[in-house]
Amino acid sequence: MHVSLVQLAKPVLHGYFRSSCSWRVRIAFALKGVEFDQVPVNLIKDGGQQLAVIQYIDETRPGPRLLPADPKKRAQVRMISDLIASGIQPLQNLYVIQKMGAEKMQWAQHFIDRGFRALEPILKETSGTYCVDDEISMADICLVPQVYNAERFKVDLEKYPTIKRLNQTLREIEAFRVSHPSCQPDTPEELRG
Amino acid sequence: MHVSLVQLAKPVLHGYFRSSCSWRVRIAFALKGVEFDQVPVNLIKDGGQQLAVIQYIDETRPGPRLLPADPKKRAQVRMISDLIASGIQPLQNLYVIQKMGAEKMQWAQHFIDRGFRALEPILKETSGTYCVDDEISMADICLVPQVYNAERFKVDLEKYPTIKRLNQTLREIEAFRVSHPSCQPDTPEELRG
Image (cartoon, rainbow over all chains, first blue to last red; front, side):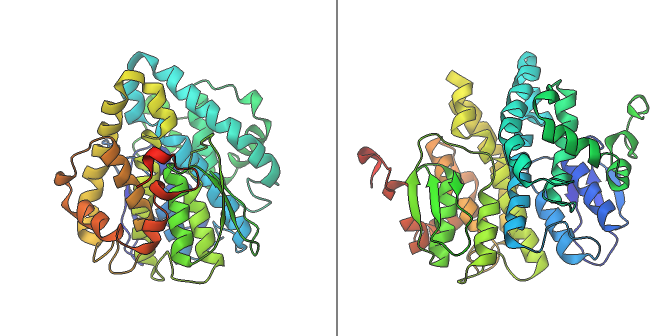
């Protein structure tokens, strides 16, 4: 995933319909009401960078804040985001999974379960309607694509009632719906829904 | 790794001498001139969170900025930091490496090399004396522990002249020296240097 960082031009997202990284940025743009172009890239370049892009969008574009003004809440948002984007997602992204061969399902489930066990009690403390209180933030942007991956790898979400509840609330929101992998320019016909 | 987030009290770093996550936070505290207590924890909890802590420190403490004021440079700092903290470190941390058994050296080398191949041309563009221009930033805080891990896993640094040069410059700086794993309260005697 790559995003052109020219500040005032219409941004171009070079991404992949199913990549968590691309998806997070799509949600951020949708929440901010920023129009952008998408250039599908089949070579998936994962490896961080999405949080840098999201915070850059937040700092340079009007629209709802994706990080709260209060430093302590900002830290909570970043901790939840980092736990997902550094602690879970890199261990079950396509590149790593492909290296695991026959064990890939078991590997992905293991690391998602391990991450969700850490995440559930944190979200139980911090959440209101959304991950941190009642404002949508970067933490929510990170959560929804991760839960989608958990479902793909058949992780039992009943063990994580807070994660499950937040995901159900978030996926109804317009910015999350329009950015879903099922309706992107490069989504294959059989995955559209 | 866990850091108490009480804003005005003396912070307590619950960490591990060799964990990259703990080390990054130690460097940030040293750069800011913030005194803190360390409580060694042998159970290593990796998984992100260190960048949240570093940005929280930056937003709530005086001292040199760890993120530049300019949004574009901030994005560069965060991209480099995320590339390391999400794209490389989680794939070669102790927990993952232990799961790989006999293949652990090869696995770690593979992912560090892959990450450094992406990082080297970025740093060639962005660096001055340090990772982004001539100010020390969160990117430098992330780089030094990652190069230490590369050396532990015998990655050939000659292929990455910019990474090598930056690391050589940074490791001479007081804040980086005092926070090095070789001189922490829980460093075993045989690893002190």
